[in-house]
Amino acid sequence: MTNASAVHELAALLDRLGVPLAARQGGTLAARSPITGEVVATVREASPDDVEAAVARAHVAFAAWRLVPAPRRGELVRLFGEELRAAKADLARLVTLEAGKIVSEGLGEVQEMIDICDFAVGLSRQLCGLTIATERASHRMMETWHPLGVVGIISAFNFPVAVWAWNAALALVCGDPCVWKPSEKTPLCALATQALLERALARFGDAPPHLSQVVQGGAAVGAALVNHPLVPLVSATGSTAMGRKVGPALAARFARALLELGGNNAAIVAPSADLELAVRAIAFSAMGTAGQRCTTLRRLLVHDDIYDALLPRLARAVATVPVGDPRREGTLVGPLIDEAASEAMTRALAAAVAAGGQVVGGEAVAAVAQDGAALGGWYRRPALVEMPAQRGPMLHETFAPILYVTRYRALEEALALQNAVAQGLSSSIFTSDLREAERFMAADGSDCGIANVNLGPSGAEIGGAFGGEKETGGGRESGSDSWKAYMRRATNTINYGKSLPLAQGVRFDVE
Image: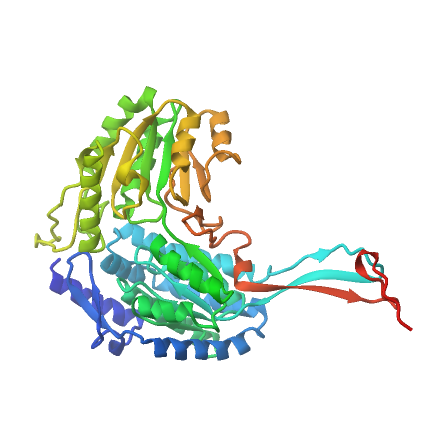
């Protein structure tokens, strides 16, 4: 498939998804496909004034939407889920073309959107508070939850539609409008998603306008959203460096931050591990999405007794995994998002060698399309790096398919190594020893927000809270009580008696 046919296919996709021609032509933001590296569309960028106007419109929408009963708000999200089901193949194909994901991962991302819609619809009838025991006779105390306000969403290129859906589906059932700044690397996915939501809104019928808006652009657009006084919550997914700017800015105006930042994730392979299972899990976790997931496995801690049995199998997987055009059947590793990502991988591998590492793989791959035409994207073979100790680039996240491996002798040592990085997102252990598994998940085990046993750290279901500790930001998306981030709590006490007892036995009698 040549670049010309890819551009033609993309235009047809956007037409079917309902993206207006004017929204994808004549702008200053170049949308590139990592498959070829070529510009496939030009999108209009928002200005800070545009963000101001969008938030003002959303605030007006909030005044009406918060009064709509939550189950009725859930109906909108249900309709959106139907639109996603109908357009799943097209939206997934767009994710492949713009983000470079292989076909199954593009489909999986849209399925994740559908799943979170189902989850949010159920929650729309369960946004309930507690009735609380009170020490005062003839009183009742309870908590109630109310819509919070305009939610700002800043998403990253690696999950160009699912992360928005995690937030937007819950925000909408909680009574909150959304203003979305997508990654400037994947603007078309955002336009398509917004178009599908607008179809659902048209079917819904009586929603206020501007419940969801997209503002395209870079750091200045994000800063305008973060600093706006009418945005009480910003959910931001991206680098730790980005989080260092967003977090303090929100704290300065006492707004809420839901931060999903970096992850330098580790897996421990214990002596009792099922190596067949471990190899398959490690391969996906380290190489899936070309190593461009926040949950990607980057550090592998292998017990000395099985190191020599495991490493050759991993080296073989790295050497033989199909790398190339993600549209082609059988491809498992597509391109890196851009040239900068490829350069970062090169620098990390050089630093690993300087720190005593031995590298297998990592070289550039000359990818070709189905018709044999050369592709101009940035394709790299995944790298397996044996390190004499956990040091150098192993301590830092590089958003590329690099798996560092080192040995350990005792579980305590492995846990100390796993926890000795700045991030705390995801982790796993491969073991058949129940005590080791329980120790790993205990209070003094993994310090990550996600701790898995006998599966890799990459990949998450919407039923569990997603997020991590330390420089990962501390935020949680989805999961059992994630809806509380999008609402405000009020404690209510009702006196249905004729006396006025005070709490804690305080007396204050007046004539």
